[in-house]
Structure formats: C-alpha cells, structure tokens
Image 1: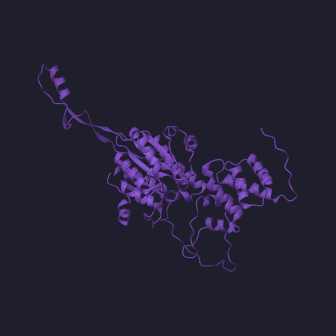
Image 2: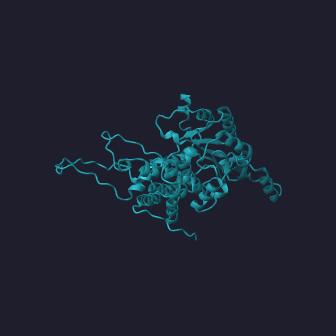
Image 3: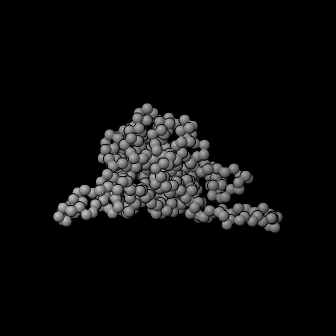
Length: 416
C-alpha cells in the first residue's frame, strides 16, 4: 500500500473541498473514483498550481480518467462544475420539463445529461410558485395515450441518455435478438415429396428388392445459415454509439438458436482490430473490457478507407466465403481519399451477400449526403439505416429478414 505524506491544508481549504465534491459528481456519473484518487488529485493540483485553466483540467484528467469512454463524461462534468459560471441554472434547465412554445428547447450535448444528473444528484429543484396564484386555473392533461418509460427509452438517442438510462438500455439490449432466415444450399437432404430425385438412395433401395425399382427417393435443399460480419467504428464521434452496438453484438453472438453460423466482429478507427474471440466471453462487461484493451485506437481518429482495405486484404476470404451479411456501423466522416474509399466499399459489397450501413447521423431530419466519405460509400450498400437508439436496433432485425429493404438509400441517392 502506498504511504501518503500528510498534506499541508490551508486555513480555508475551499479548493480541496471543491475537488472532493467534483470527485463525488464523477462517481455518480459512472467513473470509478475512490478516496485514493481524490488524495492524488489534491496533491497533483498542489504541485501543478492553480494558475492555468488548461493545466488544471489535464491535472484532474490524469488523476480521474483511465479509460477512453470516460473522457467525454469527465469533460462535461468539468465544464459544468468549474468552467460554466451559471452551471446550476443550466443544469436545472436540462433536468426540469420545458413547456413547448414558451421555453426554447435545447438539445443536450454528448454526456451532458449524465453530468447534470450527477451534479444535481437525486434532489430535483423545486419550481417556485408566484405569490397570489394559489387558486390559479389548473390545466388537466390527459396522459392516457402518452408513451411508457420503456417506449420513451427505446426512441431516445444513445448520446443523450443519463447514467440510469444507459444501464436500463443495456439491460433491454441484452434481450434483443437478430434472427435470420436460412439460405437454401446446393447440397440436399432426404425428404418426402422433394423436388429432386435422389438416384443414389433410390438405386440402393432397389438392390435390396432384387433390382426392382419400387419407390423413388427425393431430396430437398439443405438449409445453411450465413455468417454475420460487423465492422464497428470506434472513433471519437462514434464512441457512445459503438459501445451500445457492441453490447448488442455480444447479445447476438451468445444467443442460441438465432440462426447465425458465426458472428465476427471488427472495430476500426485508425486501424482494424478483430475482437471476435472477446465476444465469446459470457460476461458482457468482461468481454467489452478485453475488447477495449485490444483496440488501442478507441476514441481516436478515423481512417475508414485504409481499415476497409486491411479487412478486404486480410479477412474477407476467411469470414465471408459463405455469403455473409455485413453490418457497417459508422458515420462516414472520413478525410482520406474518397476514390480509394469507394473502391474498397465496392469490393466489400461484391464479397457480401448483403451490406447494411447503420449511420447515427440519420437521426437528424435534415440529414443530407454532403460529406465526401458518405457520398463515396452510399452507392455500394444494400440498405442505409439509422443506428442511434434501441428502436433502430429492433428495426434492424426486420431489415435483415427482408432482402428488398433499402432503408433510406433511395431517398438519399436521389439527393446526390
């Protein structure tokens, strides 16, 4: 156990108290912050000083953040707690219900709702009532047709979920399935009334009858199930979505009788990583922890074209030889050569039975294929769908069972 030298605390230790309260907010937001890290943070701030804002941010960041997925939450809690002078009013506006038409609705940023919930805790502020309005007119609202909490959670964006909502969403995702219909193969199996005659079995039967042909044996196509190949973007703009998609893939990979021959999973940001073997772990937290440890480019940059080139060169023939269905989860925001990206997408499309692209940017009503990467990738997919909520993951199962489903591809191709 490390031994700590006694800390010289000033007479009015307000900064140390604020760091302690800040650590408690991080703990409520989901970061594993213990007393040892709080002591390290106070000692680090005492050594680094409190004169530069950026130095203070990165000092606390080094003490409290040790996993890539905690960076966004830490940044939002830090901004609301230290940098925003009206953070309490801002958090109350996010947590309290807004009246449509009276107060302008503001969409929370990534992990901002979790930060606000962590800072406010379980105590919601009371709305002050003006004096003299005790007998004001009461407005009755018929809530018989409102959505249940579960239905609301299904349509909520993964980026805008609070800590409790993310935990509940993970439990709901663990119950999702992704069934697939079998593919008829050229191999046959014995069946009464089949469309093909099994001449070998027919002749063997006639030999038992002294060469007399009494009955014809028939065959039907033997069903087989395709592989599911998933290419998941884990760059900075896709971190929260990819984390929930990986939870979904773990549930699919461990679902017995779902119909898939095998589920292969790859992550990519600046490089391609095969995480298939990690999904075989029954515990989802242990599986994603080991997968995140192997994928060193989590929350980094994006090189979609180069990563697809690596997949087509090294893995395509290994995992896609039996007509695999490919799920590509990315926002398509790539700054590399669009021509090379289009070439790799075309090769991937020709190797797959179906190529389905899930893009969380489709959650915006005004989405248009303006980015060069999206324009290069869109013509080479069979289906283009949103992938930002539990509802969109449920609709994915219906899209896989319908070979003619193209999602939003036709509409966006017309806009090119």
